[in-house]
Amino acid sequence: MYWLELLVLTLYTGALSFIFVYSLSQLNLVYIYRKAKKNKTIPTAADITKDYEYPHVTVQLPVYNELYVVERLIDATAQFDWPKDKLEIQVLDDSNDETVELIAARVADWQAKGVDVQHIRRTDRKGFKAGALQYGLSIAKGEFVAIFDADFVPEPDFLKNSVPHFNQGEKIGVVQTRWGHINEKYSMLTKLQAFGLNTHFFVEQNGRSQGGHFLNFNGTAGVWRKACIEDAGGWKADTLTEDLDLSYRAQLNGWKIFYTPDIVAPAELPAAMGAIKSQQYRWTKGAAETSKKLLPKVLKAKLPLGTKFHATFHLLNSAVFICIVVTAFLSVPVLFIRNLSSGWHTLMDISMIFLMGYVFLIIFYWNGFKEKREGFWKTAKDFVPQMFMLLSVFLGLSVHNAVAVFEGLIGKKSPFIRTPKFNITDKKDTWKGNIYFKKKINPLTALEGFLSLYFLVGLGLAFYFNDFALLPFHLLLSLGFLLVFYYTVQHTRNA
Image (cartoon, rainbow, N blue to C red; front, side, top):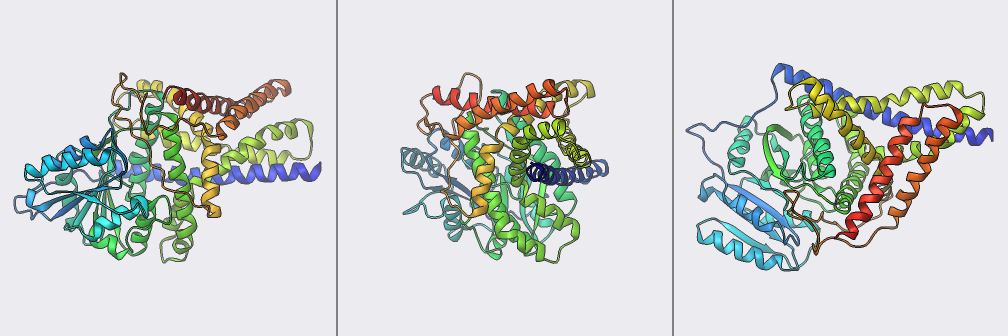
């Protein structure tokens, strides 16, 4: 029993330690971000002077079966306020359904209006999105390449606000902008996603950028210098996050990513739990694959220690889900050890200190949430319930995401699964009848339902032992797994 208890507490404390140090890295980004705000060093949209020489820009739209949103995407980019003779639009279409005909018709309409927009088809989907982008790059006319996924609806002034920033330095390889959310108020799930993404774009991206650390192109709503992509080795399809992979390869070669939150590109958030899981799976597994591929190179590179520290936890951020699963599963046995065993008090005290990591994450999200809001008490009143629900769903997705991370770390390959788009912008819209919605429930969903009951037992044990130290954690876990289970089943039934 001694060795079993030692093993449980060692794994539990070790996982909490990783979360704690990761949280410290996020807290440091908060400090850098707040300092930059105070010093007013965060970039705004670019100003175009009268003598500005407009460069040739290629806009790439990688598309695969986007029946519901592709037309609005083409319309939005075709209306960019940029000289027509300096603008090329590539619709990189790998579709195999009616999307092909919709694109062909829309492209023909805009070509008739004098817009240089091309419908580009490949013979196969080799390399998925990365392969399409690389193919388009090989025939692109532009010195700069703007990229938009199918769920985005950029404003006409996007290029004018972003492209001139490249004039600030020859080594600026990317200008990344902030994502907006056209359906943020659709449901609780879209509100929570917007909450999390806003914190990423306001705090995390600003913190990395202002601190001189590595950051990432977010896969869309950004502009690349074509020479940067070529110098870094081009788009690669050996990870599911081709954007993170290329970002790090470029920065290891000395290129810089210029980030400005002042330019906003509106996009549609996934509204159904199945779509959220699909997106989360790709992001977390791809991040694990990229860390395995590039972290050794980062650690060997001649970089400041602070940059290596932040890059390490940036690349390993998806590993947090494995640590969450470990601490969650073991937290119930830990309750028994705390109350039925003796001799572990020191280790127990240390592990409780490491739970402070979750407090640091709350501070991190608070700084993102209060951005663009006024009034402390009103903001706090909105923040508390949303933060509670965000943590719950975040924890509820941990098993699903941990499986993806594990697959990425052991090298198990899987195809690029796109996030289904629904063209949902207000509460009257629905995904019922959407042909891309998967109506099959993953067996992992049953485990999520069981885990909700498992952590409900943890809540009961808190009262049985009169030990409430882990009660908030078990409450969040039980509710989180219940919500993920419920929404997965309910949204699939309603498809």
